[in-house]
Length: 201
Ligand code: GRF
Image (cartoon, rainbow, N blue to C red; front, side):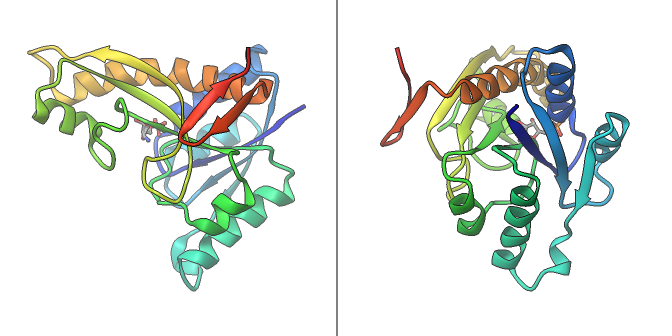
């Protein structure tokens, strides 16, 4: 059975939807480990409640960014992780991790990339005045919110939206989309051609 490793920094609602999908059999996989860069991440509790091993890797315990990324890669490899899922992991991952898991790291971002990369994507969408935004799952490269796009979902923006209302509407789509993208990745009938994620057949 394919093995997932999930990296978080906070709330962990995407982690929860992955856990739920594994439990219900919607995802034919197991989550071997949840790693957080913050000891106070609420998602760690969700993992423990689901009986999943947790690891807290704090940046200040490592000499530099590269040493931190090597520690992440080691922790994931030690548990035979096949696919790494970033789920609200608030760090840019560097070459040491990306090269250890080529085309095997996914991230979810709350906008239709390449629009509104980086922090506060929902606020950026409101500020720009777009009528449609959404969520993107993409393969991770060392560039922020870059990398081949695996799946996207569109979400309308309403005139009355607050950032909270818009974020909640996007989050509903995120939870569905991430599970769908993970399933697609695990099925294995895909290739990467330049910037494009191409499904076979
Ligand atoms: C999500 O909006 C995700 O797209 C972004 O960070 C947020 C994490 O939320 N990368 P949660 O921790 O999964 O609830």
